[in-house]
Length: 273
Image 1 (cartoon, rainbow, N blue to C red):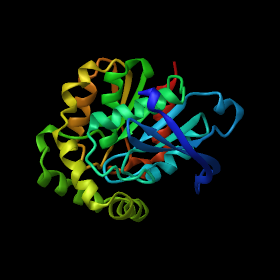
Image 2 (cartoon, one colour):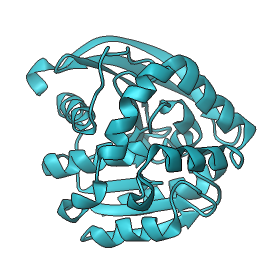
Image 3 (cartoon, rainbow, N blue to C red):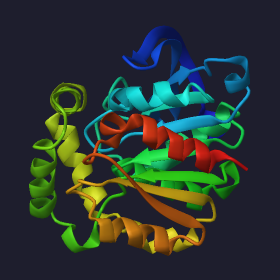
């Protein structure tokens, strides 16, 4: 995988939140196995933080790293942050074909190896939990820390109709800002055709079958009002992993917006040796 790794360009931008201020970031466009993936790098905000672990944030279906910004700004207080736009999402170009969960994981693994990121904390949200859990099973040597935020998909409701209803219920609970970001990503940065091509991969992926093979120390977090991830399912996810704990924070599905401070605290605590 790493032989096909290429950084194509870099640029800088500013990322932050009302509570944490602004930090300067750089982005890189990478090609792995014929698929392009864009990363945005937020350096630790102090010398001590810059010397700490790197947090790699992986988004869910239809969206991009954009909705991670409040959480990323919090994590940048204690470490470096890498925000990922998977192939076809956000600033990563549409590959013109469906990309499986396994392929997303392989591309990300190739980038992490190519960037020589030493033992990152992998953080996946929603479909991103499926990607990072696949990655740590196939490439256990890359990290010993995993965070699953709002893990999908509940086997009891692994149908298009059930997930559509759950998504609608969640939209009614999310903040206007979170809904705006998600809507723009779904409609314009991902696009409905690519979203629909990805949806079967999400629904057909039985994450529960590989969770017992996860050897990384794992943190599972859900929002206390998340209609997409029932409490029983989140607890089952944690129970299937040999070394895992389950926690709750305030809010619905997009907990990076509803409770970024507490979510960051749990992740930082989990990242400790």
